[in-house]
Amino acid sequence: MIISHKITLAATFKQRAYLASAAGTARFVWNWALARWNELYEQGEKPRGAVLKKEFNATKYEKFPWLGEIHRDAHSQPFANLQKAFVAFCKGTAKRPTFKKKGKCRDAFYVANDKLRVDGRRIRLPMVGWVRMREGLRFDGRIMGAVISREADRWFVSLQMDVGDYRRDRTRDGIIGSDLGLTTFATVSTGEKISAPKPIRDALRRLRLRQRSLSRKQKGSANREKQRRKVAGVHLRVKNIRNDFLHKTTTRLCRENQAIGIESLNVKGMLRNHRLARAISDVAWGEFGRQLTYKGPIFGCSVVAHDQWEPSSKRCHQCGWVKTTFALWERVFHCEGCGLVCDRDENASLNLVPSADGKLRLGRLPVAAVAEPGTKPCSLVGTN
Image (cartoon, rainbow, N blue to C red; front, top):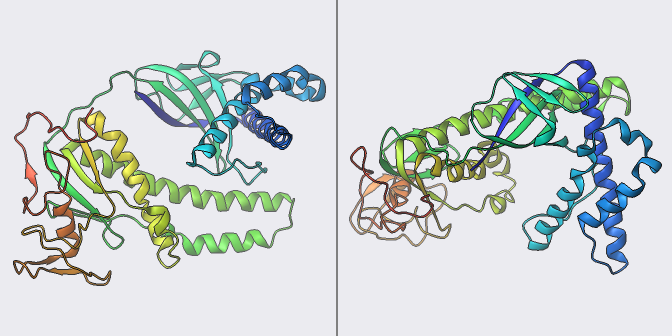
């Protein structure tokens, strides 16, 4: 299993200058490779990243002698990244790669595993030397590589580590369903309601003021760059608050349950509704599902993603009767089959509780099931 461990770097001013130069080199090489790729494609050829890399390496120090001051990993990895980007584009899973502009893209570069060394709370990087880290490694395993990146005015190292068969023990063996919402982030079939912070909503006024000040600064000036970093700092704080909540919530749910049922939501399609787009982005439904998916096998927890067209909100969890229409503003579920009256989200979460075959229970489970501690996890989709 490959786990990425992201740690903040406490770099000196001199080290920060080199890191910025290396990130700029990676951006320059990406743009060169993309321009060459488009040129070859227009000529009717089928470009490849390895061929472009060989062509670039043949004359790079003659045409761009300043590359000698930057370690070769920074101007070598962009070709592999561009190849992967075009493969994803051809498969339809990503957009076509575009050129990167300074200040408009993520500053980052790659370092191979044989060019770095970690010793406690410091890391040795090529051309830089030892750099202090805010914390040590929390995982034992082989380092496969590292990506140095900048967010706002802070530098991070993301270490990809092969931890082998990494497992952690569960504290309980519950079986639950979870229905996501905006007012209440998640309603669990046990009756628990999880509220999420709204970081972008809380920081909206501060963000508007700083962006307004940024728009009034002269382009290319030092004051504009300072203000741009202040705006980026607000976005970084919003991101950190959201990620902190999601990681703590998903870890707790996977640690306490042997099976979790969730909905496969079309978040990208929901964001087209401009009245709800900001609120949906603020709670990050897609990231919640992604974290449950990769944390499930670590705790031996099966995550069952039900189809988005399943009428979990319209179906009665007791008798299975399905409403023909159910408006979004209706928050109480009234069943005409058995006369049940309950909260809309609670009814949906009970319908999402997985059964042994990984399907909806269709009213066969009025309450969340809890297995005896130490029992073997049920065989569901996603069990590893």
